[in-house]
Amino acid sequence: MIRKLLQNPACLREERGQVIVEFALIFPIQLFMTLAMLQLSHMYMTKLTVNHAAFVAARAAVVVPESNNWISDAQQEAMAAATMIIAPLAGTRETTTTDTVDIPGWNSRSGNRLERHGAAEDKTRVTIARTPNQNSGPDIVATVEYDFELIFLPDKTIMGAWSNLPGQTFQFNSNYNVSHLTLTESCTLPRNWDIGAPSNQ
Image 1 (tube, rainbow, N blue to C red):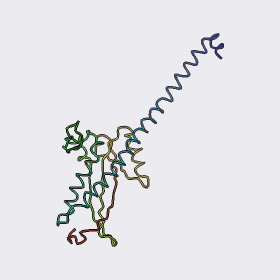
Image 2 (image 1 turned 135 degrees about the horizontal axis):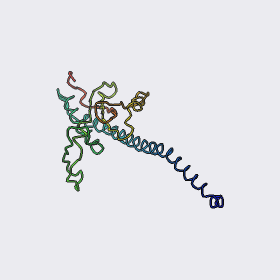
Image 3 (image 1 turned 60 degrees about the vertical axis):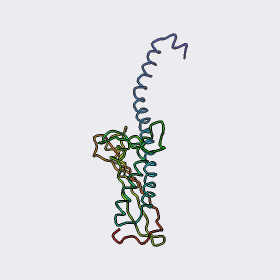
Image 4 (image 1 turned 180 degrees about the vertical axis):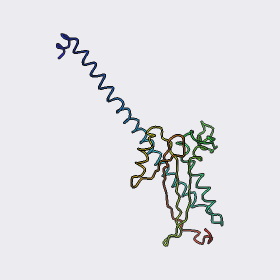
């Protein structure tokens, strides 16, 4: 083969042309697959974070003392807890604020500041509900919705069709200029004390 190429340089030029054509055909597909894998990995990591945020929100709501305003108080505490978990992953685009909060002991190198807390608040919604449980008193259900910004794969057709598949816990969100997915996770924790809750709660 080498002797043939040395004897006929035209064959070498043909081989080079073939390699360039193959590269031009394969590289865009390979690049698309690589970026898609990175985007899906980031989305899955964020989904796990939102799942943990739902647990933290439910835990914060469980310990709120009983009162006539329990739902609103619990929702406020749950929102604060969930945004602390989500803030490190929140983007800064498409939000009205990107302010920080100070948390003693969070990170002394950054002055105990939790970055992007305002962006997390803008993109996060927390709902707290109380459901009856005959065995242990009321259950506290925390539902966290987070608008995840798509860096890649912004195609509304693909993501919209995927979000309609059974069992998915996200929906395509078209309320932003940049494509977002709304990731939804819930957590239920039992509350087996303070069973005598106010009747309006």
